[in-house]
Every structure is written in structure tokens, then in C-alpha cells.
Length: 363
Image 1 (spheres, rainbow, N blue to C red):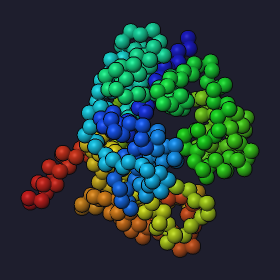
Image 2: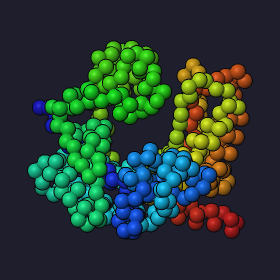
Image 3: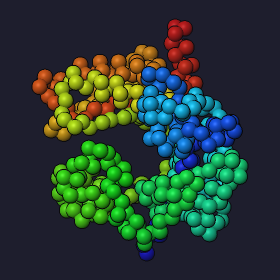
Image 4: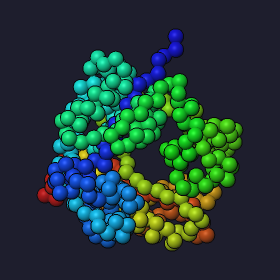
């Protein structure tokens, strides 16, 4: 007997940090709010929908946001408040299932195949969750319902803000077919162009392309792309999955030398540091190890890492350590690189780390 498909809900709070600020300060409502510290190295944590109309989005440099929207109101992030609201939302989730996989403070996957609340369907669960969030936090959330995580996440974005979109198992293929390939996880601008060279612009094109040829061209990711085009995603919802690494990477328009990587390492370090700060504030865990990843022009992947005595305390320090790691690559001087990534790993509980550091210092 075939196993019935999972029922997955992806819940995503709408412009979460900015919405909390607008909720708590009536003067900010209806105005373009950017949650970020002002400064040359600051990045945007969140932008209200009023600011997004000007092209402002999270993870972009704060200076860029200021240029795009000079009238924006910059508000420094208050993660204590955001975490408190996130706990409220998590308690609402827990009324329906124990299978909750948080992705960040503002979004999570829920497996409601067998909801503990006794509601008749995954759609009913999603509606109940959204109503409770609105009533108890005075905020809105969007949700996607689907037979797997990948499709549910795409669906949650379909009727933002404050929307619900349901993709039933029988409708998955039709739902995915017209979508541009950049909606698939892992398809950035460079991969999008490489697929366009093969006349693949939409998921339907990808589905029709020879699966073996995709794998020959793109390795394991080519196989994954074909599976995604068919709506296949077997990943289970994993409660309280610990973060193993926070990283950012980029593929270049042209292959670069080792020396030419420095500005890209600095840019990616700033992006990684912003994501890392969200992880620290959300879960209280700190990273000790810096990782530099390179992919050569002939697709060989190499990584080098360093666990310094003092863990990085800023994006600048992270960039400096990552840049220094270039010296540990024993590749020929003429080697060209098509991708670089900067990451932080070796996560530990902040309190225990600080206690151990103090003991070590006392010795």
C-alpha cells in the first residue's frame, strides 16, 4: 500500500522585524521602514513593504538602501523583542504539531500530516495558525501548504503579504511548470544564465530536458534540478535542527585569480556576518571556525578553515581571516577560480563557550 503524502506547511511572517517596529510605534505605520544600523558596513535586516517598493530588501548594504529610498526611516534592530514575538508564534505552532523546523526567527516548516489539534486538514491548520498569529501578536503571516518542503516554501510566497496558498499533490506538476527556474533553490543569476544557454527558462523546460545530460553538466546538482522539476523533495521536517554552518558564496561572470578574490571575500564576509548575527540572536550559539571555499575553473572544490584563539568579533575580522586563508591553498599560481564562499562553523552554546574561555583565561 502506497504511503500517503506528507502535509507540510511553511509559515513566513510578513516583513517580520519591520512589522514588529511598525506595530510597536504607530508613527512608523504606512512609512518605509528599514531595520538596520546606519553605517558603511551595515546591512539591511528587514524592510517594510513600503520600503520594498523602492527596491530595498534584506541583506543589501544599508548605504544602498539609503540611496534607493532617501526618505526611509532607519530603525536599529531589537532582537530581544523579535525573539519574544518569535516564541509567541512558536507556541501557536506547537498547538498543532511537535514537528516544527525553524529556519529563522520569522519562518518555519511544520509537518501536519497528523496534527495534534485534531483539525481536519493541513489547510485548516494553516488558517488556524494565521488567525491566531493575527489575534495574539497583531502581526500577519503568509503560509504555503503542499506535500513537501520545497513546494510549500514556494507556495507561501505566492500570496504575500497575509496570504495562504495551497498546492495539492495532484496539482504539484502543473503548479511548478510555468515557474521561472530562478524560483528553484540554488538557481542564482549565474546558474540561470547557464540554463538559459540550454534554452531552459521555466520549470517545464527543465523537466523536458534530458536528466542524464543535466547530471553530466552540473553533477549532483543537475540530478537535484531534475528532481525539483518533478516536485520531488523527500527531506523530512527536522525539529530544532542545529546550525552547522552559516555561509555565503558567489559564482563569478569570469574566472578570477587568487588576488582578485579579495573584494569578493570582503563582500561575502559582510553578508555571512549579517546572517550569523541573526543566528546568534535567535539561538544564542556562536561560531568559532572560519571557512574559505574555492571552486576552480575546472570545478574542483577546495576548502580551508581556521579556528582562531579569539573568535571573530566583526565582519571585518571575518573578512581578514578568510582572506588570509588564501595562502593555505597549494594550487599553481595561474589557477583561476569560478566561485568563492565564506563561512562560519563550529557552533557552540554561547554561555558554555564564554564560561570555558573564562576558565582558560584564569589558568
